[in-house]
Length: 289
Image (cartoon, rainbow, N blue to C red; front, top):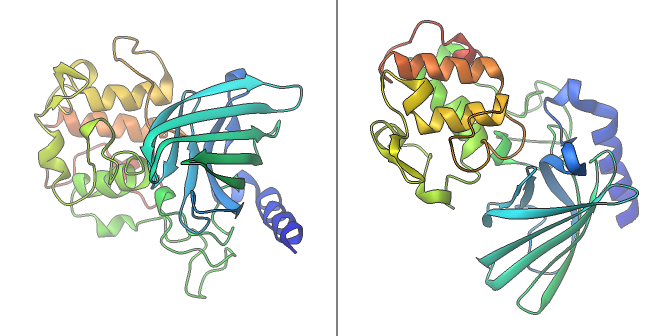
């Protein structure tokens, strides 16, 4: 029965494909996998199949919402790769370790989570709208296992916000950037001391020194390109470069579209206002950026 459920879950993911559901986990350089994975099978109490999501980047891993960012080690194999990550003080364990084998095409993770003398076997597949697993970290507000409108959950699993709902560019940034891409790490986990959850995000980032680089502000009104740490990290994740900024680009997982990052820069250059629509920021305010 378990094997049947796993096969069904994989069939949903592979048949739907990225065109139907947006960005899917992908193979990156060095056989690393990048993306979000929901658990279709797990044992033990270290992870929760209905709650936890594995988020991978080329250098970082998160178990959302339980464990913040940890450094990953990737060992290429003849078929796929071995991915290992270790957290300190997570899920009630002094040391929690994730060890999974990733398939060559990054569509399947299988392995274990160990800690506190316990072990959980896990099987994970790409998180997609229509897989029947609610994943708030990718903006899902519902997931009833299909992509049919009019049955209580829309074909986008509630991830898209109608542009007419935004009275200000800032509101769109909170919804379509922070809520959808950043609060996995910078929410309850407050990775790096940053919390991007509403309310109060604007006051916590505009004109505030960056914890990792006090010489920069998180958002420096009027100067996105050289003095706004947040924009530089997002641009680094999308386009690369910016070696002057420590650490990897953000967010962990699929990068933001280039037009969204550009629109965020326009908002900063306009003074990073909390009210009003800034010209040229349509990429942020449209329904599905």
